[in-house]
Image 1 (tube, each protein chain N blue to C red):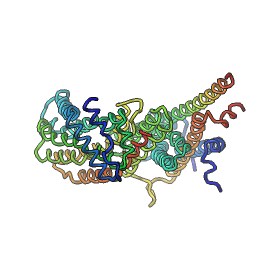
Image 2 (cartoon, rainbow over the protein chains, first blue to last red; image 1 turned 90 degrees about the vertical axis):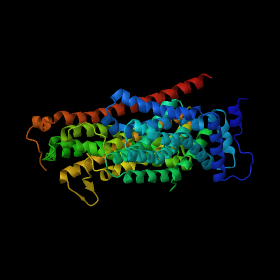
Image 3 (cartoon, chains in turn yellow, brown, cyan; image 1 turned 60 degrees about the vertical axis):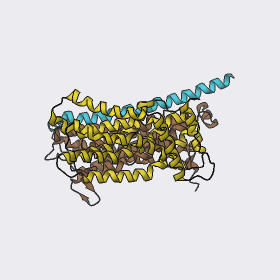
Image 4 (cartoon, rainbow over the protein chains, first blue to last red; image 1 turned 180 degrees about the horizontal axis):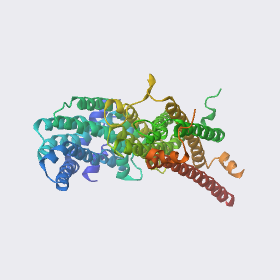
Length: 242
Length: 241
Length: 60
């Protein structure tokens, strides 16, 4: 057995005692983070993709500084969104294929717990690095320091929502025909409001207006998503596995 | 009265078959009246010119696009909560008509927008969220059909539709939240600023759109029932008749 | 309640906006026709599938 599948084989928690949300959450997040730590290619690729996409725009459109500063917030947000999207299948696909996901649904922990844990791990492995890298990309676009801060803040608030929405779509599309294109059709329309407010926050700051309305709405979306979506993800996984 | 009598595909099939023609008749009559008012009677708008008459189909189809999605999501919720096959079939039956209404709303909006405000398309809040609604319909239909097992498709797409409901308030309130290109609401519960013939025409055409959507959905759900239940005895007997 | 237009040609011209008005109404009409055709075809396919399965069963 390869190391990866050995890790994955420890899918069910050791103790079959009574389950809890936090127990399931902590266990799933730790497991997925351990897997990502041993195999960092996925995490590195996500960040590399973000940097690559951000480089394509100046090369394609022209590197005139004023233009770049104008399109910077939007391009950075789109690049981060696409990179986070590409990392979505990693949440559930491998576990679904080798049967670990089914094992998890049989565990005493509620699905809402370990599903949230997996999504939290996805965010830590994709959303957080993207957020941390965004100031560097922003500098490439000539954005001012205050814009960089707001950009990073908007990503910090928005990427968890993308992980939650995208995670729900990834769970729904498990085992479906159509693969990545289907997932794109499901997830990207749902991402649109987050993109609009996220890029809008950075653009507002860049043009001298206050980003507070946009950031407040992102925070509200984050709260609503955290409260409502884990249940949907758990249900989606159960639908996929039954 | 047994509320669940018509919850079975076999009984609903007959009911839908009897209801659908009446829906279409009502739609045709309402459309005739509405088009008479809108195209022939209502005066031309002073500022916009005759092109404003597109509202008599743009507004009803836009309203229906949102209403049908909401209705579809309700059937999806019912199908998940009660695990009923027919609710899922109704949701699937609504989706293509809803998508068509959304497309026509976008198309007619574009042709109204060009002469009136100078552009076929702008990325303002309401147009963008209506476009997102079209993609939500497509996503629902694609996911529902992406599985070998139709019940799995039912359940997965039902959950997707429910998640997407959040888009509806965004469309509805977007015109208030963002003061951008799209016309503000002229019709509300507090009264309207429109000429009475225009308002009547719009409302009558909305009724026509609703009746048409009901008829099309009922016809489609009958086909879906035939497809899904083709192994049952009552469907076999139907074919023999 | 009187008709607004003075003649049929005025009606079709729609005050110069004929293209935009009739492209809109035309698209709606086309969409309705297409939907009706597709619905009829779907029903026909479903009935044919039932026929086929019944014939297959009758053979066995």
